[in-house]
Image 1 (cartoon, rainbow, N blue to C red):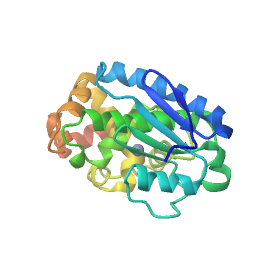
Image 2 (image 1 turned 120 degrees about the vertical axis):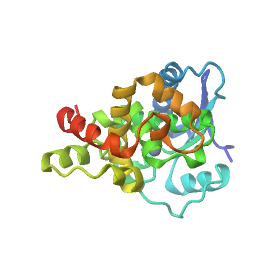
Image 3 (image 1 turned 90 degrees about the vertical axis):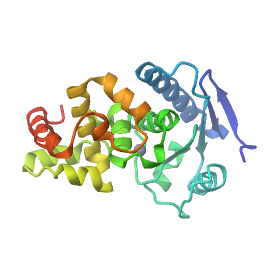
Image 4 (image 1 turned 180 degrees about the vertical axis):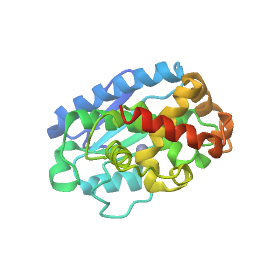
Length: 243
Ligand SMILES: [Zn+2]
């Protein structure tokens, strides 16, 4: 499937691209190197993770075909313009930034793109380390990815930060139980729970949770219950805001 693609080979990654996408491929390879280095430190990865393979699909049609046929992930065709990346095991298919204007919901902003690559790497690493990723809750998966990629610190069209800011301004924070169960709240609010838990428990506990949780019960593994956590998370978020 990758016959017409060229490749940038690095120690921990392979980036496939078609020649007009060389600049974006270089940026992707850099983002993979930086992201993998940060995650190797955080999770003490050693040499256990196989090289990550990133493929820059030059257009929506190629993206959908790679996701369906190479990753074996079900995808509607043509896929939603908000879909620009899909990880599976140690592979990640990206829609090339050169196709953003015509075929995605986003403008291409290099810094946002770099953080998005990092976000996808968090999913790859979590899946690699988790004893049972299938039962891992969405708020935890997306919260970790948004938090560890620093996406939460930046306004972007992906809107991981703005909904939290808005909810704080309006005094309308969602109930914790909704954040933990509603997929549409997992993306913008999951990171606030992960960040609070890290501040309350320390990064070591978070790292150990990623490596040890096999039943999907993140809060129990961290010695929490929703009712014990909710008032502390809420008070902390009101005090700290998104800064
Ligand atoms: Zn994600």
